[in-house]
Image 1 (cartoon, helix red, strand yellow):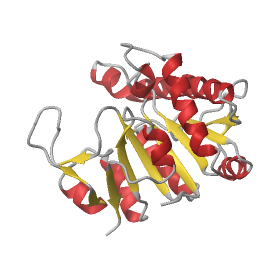
Image 2: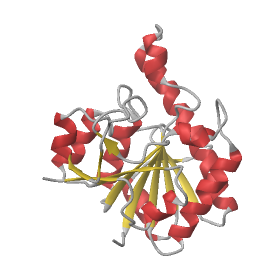
Image 3: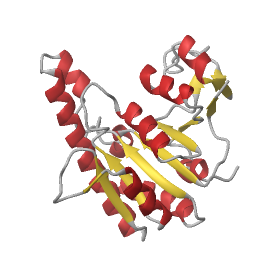
Amino acid sequence: MSQRRVLLKLSGEALMGDSPFGINPAVAQEMAEQVKTAHDTGVQIGIVVGGGNIWRGATASAMGMERATADYMGMVATVMNGLALQDALEKAGVQCRVLTAISMNEVAEPYIRRRAIRHMEKGRVVVMVAGNGTPYFTTDTAAALRALELDVDMLLMAKNRVDGVYSDDPRTNPDAVRYERISHLEALQNNLKVMDASAMALCRDNGLPIRVFDITAPSAITRALMGEELGTLVHAE
């Protein structure tokens, strides 16, 4: 299935590769090359990136830090990841813009919906960082919001070494069954960990399809961006 415009949600952890922490430039470059292959076919691409390789607000909050402060720090971590992706994409020959939900005029443009759409229409990859600019929301929710705002055909959820949606955690339960297709409602009712519940409900209420795939599979980013039926499709009723 060809796709006109898609949004790719990348976890911060995906940028670590085999490193225990931070950003592995070689991994970022490999991702950028995969994005370029799909971009060169004319697909308009937006990317929302997390910050868990640098900072996890929820974890810090559980350890006693004030939650809003911890979440804002997490948003700053996503900006660092976005700049690393921009560098890798530009080295691969792809025009890229980083748009942030928190003002950082010296390093990135402010996120403005119409500007993001215009960049994509002009053939630029748009990397969106700082979540949606408010605490208590995950980057999953930010990805769902941005996908809907930008009128994409598909939200692509890149998972680290998990090749779709399962009935249970396949890393701890060898009898877990992988779904090829499942509805938003089924995923919510069965508490399947596709994304957080508020993000899933947003996708359900607006009929936004989600494809969940394993980012570590060969050429997985390129294949997902170009509409190949990888992993699990989460669809409307």
